Image (cartoon, rainbow, N blue to C red):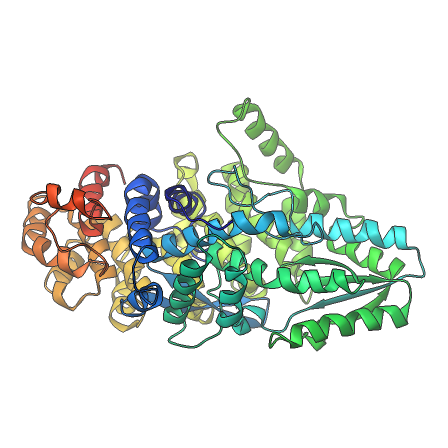
Length: 564
């Protein structure tokens, strides 16, 4: 039964602090804020939820949210070697709010899901970890291979996926499916619908790519299709919108595909014709074996490495040393050179190389970095650009690699010169800026300033401000101070963090902007009382005395900024 509680919103905040608010974007200061102030942010969210749920006017669950300004931005991200997709950056509070509702939905939905659905299996007691890590894409593929083997060599396997799934999911169907969960489904469905409508400028379809809330809603949507396939006798496995159908022969395979197509059609969706293939059982097993590493032992080991190191395990040091030892034994440079010889390099293998770069000795790490960031190579590895930059940022922020920081800076500064086209994708640009924040150079100062003045995206401006903050750039700080009123609330908050880096000048800037900031950063759902002066009044209201978002942020910035 669906019943959002305070713990759902708190879990949402802690999950963001652990894994980021969007898996396509670099971590920013809001991620740390979510973790440090999870309790306060969850309290605000739960108070607002209770107010809407208990409202005598049921329409408030939709109309109150519809009337609010909810900041979000749509960003361009690479998808494969030649494609792009749109991802959504949502204001941190509303991301927590949507994810909190979604976690409550996942909790109610999970017992109803088929074991054939492998993606995003919810862990009710997983804490910061929402989903079962063992139910991975690799595990999904291995399961289909096992079932194909049981079916025999004469069996026919169909691989297919849904065409532009996230872009075409209907909000109306999402609302109806939530309503089937019982409990507080009515108010939750209205609120989710209103939030999705705000994020998609009033359109009635689409899910915001990159966040956990959207993943849960996607699984809710497809659970209905899954049930229909089972009811009609189709043997299926699914990971997100990728389906594998197993049939005794070609005729049965075609029938199964037709059933899937019909079920999707009823929800306004269709199959991707270019990705739909029929394979014999043997050919499918051989194909997946190749996908998972095949006979290449080195590549297979690199693919299978899991980097989610847990420092709180029973033997953390031993686990970490084993991970390092495994990576050090691999001929990573040879694997990298082998991928460069291919017309289409294996993006996952390159991604793993980027993820494991910090596990090498500095002398090896700089060689790998130079290879990855070389002009022709970086273009070949363009679909893995963000992961490569994550790896470089890890090296640049780790004092263990200080001996190569100068060399890293040198190759980083060459990127806009030879690969400016790759920085046109918003997510790539953000990951690149994350690498620049560690050290100021004349070229970087010019690059960041020009970018700040020309970009239309707040998230990019925030990344520029974070660079100036890290560099303690007094010229840029004065420039921002004189343009406080023209900044968006999102940029104002990061500027506020920057003020702590500029001593008395920063203190004066805070005093100048404090009153206006409290109003500018308001969420639009705050109670019309002064938190300190009206405690008795607030305690008698249904919502109680929840903290104000702006006050929480200012208190956190003052107490934590010295360490960040």
